[in-house]
Length: 306
Image (cartoon, rainbow, N blue to C red; front, top):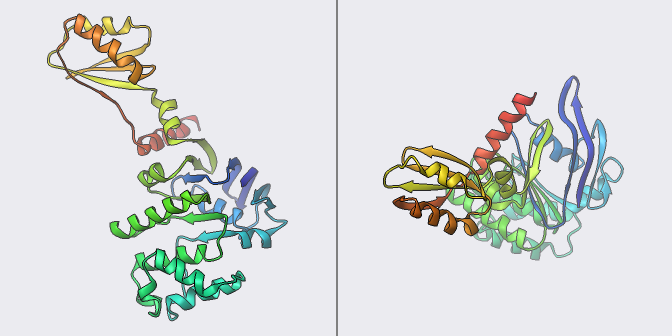
């Protein structure tokens, strides 16, 4: 559905995107993560046929960037970071312009569908210049969807929204995900990416890593559990290290941190060995890592490698 090969973009001496190769499958929600200036928005603009690559190539919906740009623009929906609405026109008029540009057959029906889904139907006759930031963002999403695109590009879809509006937008993205659309999201909201995305890519001009959030955690940290003890016993680390599925043990002020193959399968044996050695176990919990931790550790590794 989306494929890039060695995609590169320079602005003069500034290298914005460097040799990007990746593939996004049909129906996948794909997160694009990186700091400001990492090349996220530039990549999205190239894939949307808004700016030309300096090198490499890409395909969207089977159309080649730079060769079939009109077909790409007709088949995608695009939400830019700034909504770019006509403030003096009302919501219905704003959507109608784009529906007609895309030759939508049932303009009135499509407008009603998306304005209703996003809670804007009762406000359709009001000038959008008086809308809140959240309402404008929802209208911009409706504009990106009015022609029923199969691929949707979203640049910071919940940026600067209040919590209630951000939740409405996230819930709507999950609804779109259930419809089988391919959704490419640039975001700084890592919790949002963790919740919504099937896979994420971390980029800083060059692609650093791409995988599912769970696989990124597993690759960086493995799997581990924290065993909280009523009181420490000096013999316990050696007992745990002798178990065949254990890869490492570290002592903590209130117990042990144990790296192992499969917590669900291995915990009963681990607990049995500890109890037999005299441990007073208060609880055992699986350690979890946020996508934010993964992101910053990947960035640090990239900087150290550079």
